[in-house]
Length: 447
Ligand SMILES: [Zn+2]
Image 1 (cartoon, helix red, strand yellow):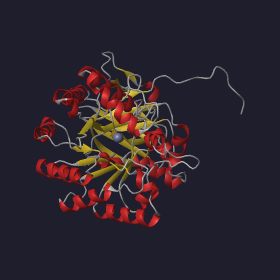
Image 2 (image 1 turned 90 degrees about the horizontal axis):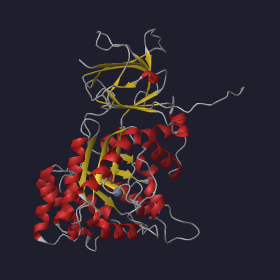
Image 3 (image 1 turned 30 degrees about the horizontal axis):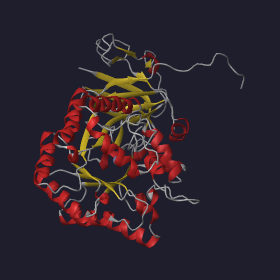
Image 4 (image 1 turned 180 degrees about the horizontal axis):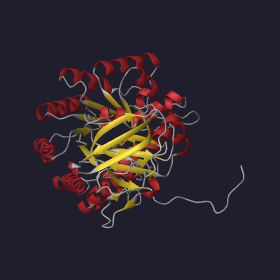
């Protein structure tokens, strides 16, 4: 039996930072017990004692001879432990393409256009290795579950479009012991060729998890949204759309999406990302839109890094920031996650798949810095993000998968201030990433 026992873990977000003793068996949490105070076990080992196993398979051994019955506890010494971060909106297939696909204007439209032109030049191997590289990077910062949108360029031919789907499935298979990944192909909005619909359905049959798209870019968004819902209904799969990623407050496809969600009985199964135009709407209209969203039980994702970079490009002086109404959506009870979006590609030149960094950017963009806000930010990359992507067995609770991240920080304030480099990540009760190198000062300073 594979066992892991930890003591003095400051559990967040649901533990409120209280110290816990945690035990996992065979990849599942068994014990989640609050401690009265810090405990001392003489034979406990520390995080710095974690070593990669000799086979170098990414496994780690906690010293203390786990084969000899009771495993020595791992003493977290009050560091934070959270359920593994959930990055609810990524583009793993496009990450790290910036050197090959530039974007001179920095606008969303040029990014789309340039990427569209370059897409046939990427081999399946290129795409697969980018997905693997980026997923591993995200894992090293603490994300144990990812949802990635995938480009699906039928205009370039079925073989180009399907290449990305196959690359994604192969990458997921290679990473299956390390990280869980959901894939949502972005279906095109000029999908008039009859065999296009068959190809789209084929991707779901092959293992894609749901239907994506960006209908606000279409000249006929209402028809496209209706078509996507009919397909999702037929296939019985969830929907996750890029919605109103535009500064124009008159762009309101979210209202059509809310309407269709109710018509098809899809409440709770539809996720809307971006919602940039919502930020620019007059207050009374924004209030109305948010109310419609809540009625349809839409789930939402803010992508503050990419939107701060891409939006407001036509503005001078007071520049719109493009980040949606984070606090108002939260106040309306709409599950709102914060996620990475693009990483080092023509859409967003920065990013590293670190959700703590994204939480910090959300804090800046949405004016969230109070102690309650900081706890809310951590929820937006953990429990709320899990809800947004429909995970039912998530969290540090008995019977749930033992996926976790340990930070070299003791409070949310410390975590968001320091963005600690040192992290330890576990998947199914097994350490899969451990920070082993720490910078060390060469001299001490008297305090
Ligand atoms: Zn996106």
